Length: 396
Ligand SMILES: *Cc1c(COP(=O)(O)O)cnc(C)c1O
Image (cartoon, rainbow, N blue to C red):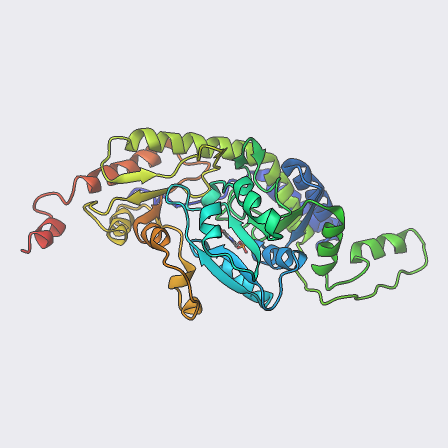
């Protein structure tokens, strides 16, 4: 029996385990010095004024929308073509998500699709770098900035991707990142908000810790210094969205691996492109003209006349010991959004129906990749004569 090929697998060495063990041995396991160190390293890596570590990208989006001043009565333009957390975060602040369609090549909102749905009530746009493919933040800001619409970049998948040569998120007032194992850099669970102004970062840092005026770590430092006890105040409604020092210890090691992760993913994706070039009916996602993807999701779109439907093809891969995944979901098709009015979303519906995510992970071997390609090549040729699928197709 050949070994099953996973769709994604984190790349860890012994260093992550050692760093986590050191955090535990230090006795400081909650948010503390390692979180502060990770924030500084991440801000430097992206090239932003400040970075605030939180428990997930979902909580990062919630804080970013509060920071952007979004509240009840506001509309926020989002892609339906995204993980559901993007739209959910808008509802957490009492605002209304307004779905816009996406570009067929990138899977991302564009200035045109945003412009088509904005109204006088539009307060913000959540621009997603879907699957790591950079969205054109510059073009969307050119539309939104003069209108006073804040653009929050959901770069959950985008750490290591580039927009016009800069890390994605670097040009946004707010950008959010995920450190879930389905993304490149992971520490189990975790997230980050990057901001372009230090005073905004300071406010988000308080909001992630119950709205406390002085952090627990700073109070501890004052105690140790023998200073008079610092009595904190709670000046606005906050949350517990903290990251732990155990997570930050792992994330710091992972951040050091980010360039190698992106390089390897781009190498494997290029190999997929070469091997699948002659296969009819498949289109592999790639770089837009203005940037580079980290291939967090290496997805293919099936032509409408591909011999198998997407779910059938996933079934064939699974039977061959290969874990694929359906492509990106569409929030407007889910029961939680059944009541949401929206414009027609033809590109979203086509992409979500006919795309699938291929296995791609740092330690994937060429032999594993060849097995995936062989199944896709066989499927593109149609059901082989005499098989159950061919007989079913012939009406036998
Ligand atoms: C994964 C993902 C999220 C949620 O990230 P978590 O860290 O799991 O909360 C949000 N938005 C997008 C686009 C994602 O892909």
